[in-house]
Structures are given as structure tokens and as C-alpha cells.
Image (cartoon, rainbow, N blue to C red; front, side, top):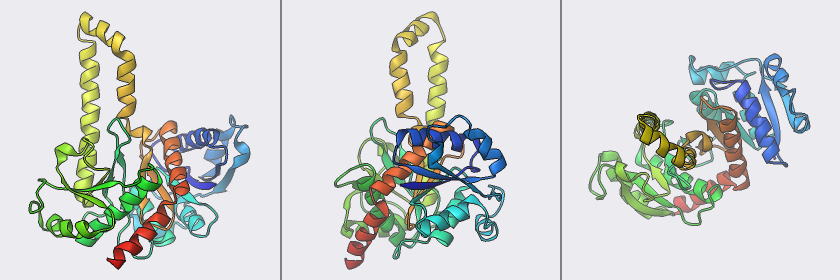
Length: 333
């Protein structure tokens, strides 16, 4: 299995992507990686990885699409960027997957323009796993499609279900529609029109899910438009970070708290890991013809390795193929 990795994307590039590649290669003995970026910056970072160096192919990609430029323009003009080269390699069968912590817009544009959508999919979607201390729930979409039509949301449910089957190993994932109430008649025009269409879709639709129930194991796939999904994701990240800060402050507030914190330290470490977004890795871009994972922009080496692992599971689980099969059933309805 070969995965194409963008070495220049993210806040901690190229250090984090290179460290992530090394960690992933040590974990997955059958994995090979094409590592693309500015060679003068990437090559010196590979000095301490003789055990896996033979499974890394370096590729010069001198152009970088930044967050400060228009994604579509960047993909069209910077043909020597890792994003463009990587998507083309996946399309041509030279690699089976693509991972980047760079511009989300460029990853989305590259997936649509250079890799291509799965026939019948109207809009690819970004779908991160929300950590809940268990296996997590898939949130789709989280920002790729701000304005949506009912058909898009129905397809999001299909793609999310395919991911949870192929990657998380669920035989019959539950798909829920994020709404302001559990009743079918509640919500705005978009969700009201979507609800009856999801009831007829070829997956297990469990109805509306309110925001307070997103982490209560009500559904395995949480469907919404990209505007709502991005608000949910960013708010949850903020709440998690704030809670950890409050807990740390209170644990050292007095002697009794310090003693209790020392005793409970192993449990706190487990909680932190269970709720840590870096353990998830990133968000898969579902609906394109290949396995694409957008890692968090702030990823460190371990988080990037988790994103590569996520891509490995997408490939092994044949997620794009499951989406195609499900789309055929959806079209037949």
C-alpha cells in the first residue's frame, strides 16, 4: 500500500509530517510513502530513520498552496505543489491515498478538480470523528459545503455510513440528522425536506438528533450542512479545551486537590486521551475517487501519524467502493 503525503502543509511542517510518516511506517510494515515537498527542507529530517528509509520515496514539490490564497486558483496554477501532484498520483493509481495538513480549501479543490468525484455524488464532504470516549461519531459535513440541498444531506448520510462500515467496522451504522428538535416536523426548510428522503434511503436512519445528544451514542453518523457542522466542531473543540484548563487550575488550587489529583492522575490521562482530537488524526474527504484525509493544521508528529493510519483504514476498508455501491442502491429508490 502506498500513500502520498504532503510534507509542506500545516503549522508544524515539514517537521510534523516527516515525524508522522516515520511513526506510521514503523506501525504499518506493509506501508510505503511518497513524501513530497521542498527537498532542501525535508531531506535533512530523515537522518534518524534508517529502519524505514527504504520505504520512503522523496518527491520534489517546490510550490506550496497556502491558506492565504484562493484554493481553486492555487490548484489551477501551482501544478508543482504536493496537493496537485498527490491527487493526480491517486487518480493515476500511483498511490492509493493522500494525506495533508495544509489548506482545507486546497484539499477540497484538489479532490474535486484533480482527483474527481465519485459518479453520482453532488458534493464531497469533510467528516471528522467526534471523540466521545468510545469509538466516536462521524460528523458530516463540517465545512466543505456551507449551503446545501436535501439531496446533498441524503448523500452525506450514505457516505458517512460507508465510512463507519469500512473504517470503524460497524455492520449497520445509525444515521441521524442534526436538528433543533427530535420531532420530524421541526427545523428549517432544509431539514424538513431532508427528513422524508432519509427515511427512504438505503441506510439505517434514526431520525433527528438534538445538539445535546450528539455525544450520547444516539447515532453513529451525524448529518448536517457544512455551516452548522463547522459551528458544532469548533464549539466542541473550544469547550474541550476550556474544560481541561479549568480542571488543571482546580486540581492545584489547594493541598487537598493536589493530593486527589496525584491519586487520580492515571484516570485523568485516560480521559485526556479519549477526548483528544489528535488521536483521531483528521477528517476524511468523502465523495472523491480515492482515500483522502485532511489532517488538523496544528498536527504534531503523532497526530499526523494517526491521520495516515486513518487513510490506511479507508483504503483497507474500501470506503470509496462502498459509497459507489450504496449510491447505486440510493439511485434505484
